[in-house]
Image (tube, rainbow, N blue to C red; front, side, top):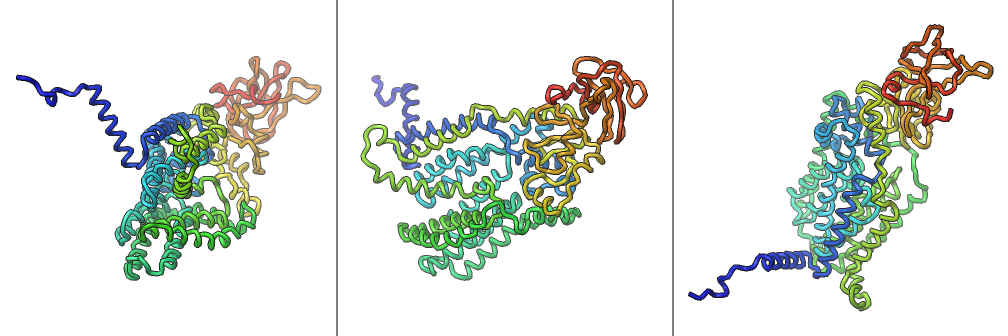
Length: 580
């Protein structure tokens, strides 16, 4: 019986090619892009994945990363945030990642693992950016916006860091996705509020986002004046109540939990009182004028954007997101006392969406180039420029994390779990800090005003702190005490001790002062130490009280130092890092 052509099996290579072509066609249809654009997107995604993989391991650790990690370490070791460890952030981020830290354990590479654990939040932010862009304009614009934001140098570098802001910003974007993804109902408003409340549980900076959200909604109601607006006043009231209840739920549970635990006073001071300092601004006073000037311009631009939208419901969405973004940025620059680069994280995706829409509009009127320049869209050139700028600012192949990991490794080696340390914000991660406040701008300002006592030197003596970490630029008065009574044994680590220098005319006897009561050894760079310490033969480590002591060597003193015995026993020496 003759076999028909239709009954013959399809060759495997042909079937594979057909499935590949069908997949490409699905991508083309879904994102509304051409085949050449699919290739460009695939290439850019491959570059982004490679730079992210290397950047997670090589991007320098920001000082906030070990600070967050130190608080998480405290939770996993039975310490309570605010009561036992000072922190000026809300606690939800630390509580969520405490189980992850517990699974990893106390190891010098923990920062890499925690970065990796948080990294999926980047995908959530990228999806939200795409979804908002698709709801406001098109899937093509949403894809371009997600790519533009992902390659933006500042955003890209911060997205690699382990910080609360990288969970806070995606939660904010999820709020907006839920809010504009359909008809506004009390249920949708309550769920939006719940997400917003989770953002409050991570950072009180959400207050500015919340005010921007409310301000944009009120202004939008005034702009539409009931036209093409399907909600009645009673519907709006019910949605507002649902939003308020949902927003208050998570912060209320957190505050109630700390109040029941008897930690309300510490919680209130760390999160609210410490962060609010009257008449403190790190920015010029003229920035107060930015919001009043920007406000009418935002109203005009929002009205024009809404008038040029094809459908009423689309006009409301576009106007709302535009006003939220504009109000947040202008209010942040005008009224926020201390602006940091991470404060702009919630606005980068929204700005990227409108930039992608603008580039798409300009792209229609681009001169008729030929060949490659005609097939590649304008956003691809902007993304390529962002990539080049990012590489120029911070070459991703250069490892800038060695200093922090070396510090953690040294701290784990030289100290025991019960030892106290002196550091600035928790750089040592695995050890309790002797000076309670984190040493940053607000703390320094409080010390300068006399609102906070600089008693770091006293606490170092009381808690017998033998390990210290100093910043590259010392600005606290107590740092002079650290400089005088601690010896550098690595690039960043200092150990309690002093260099023994005999006075002129006597090359054997050295008088010295001990500030930290602890067990000390006398070590030499090139020979065995022998002689008398305080009048008795020196035979090894000895506990020395605070005060004046003397050592008389059996041979002339050249390179000799008094060093905390535990560090000396663990092969730490000051001679390579101290000018004799």
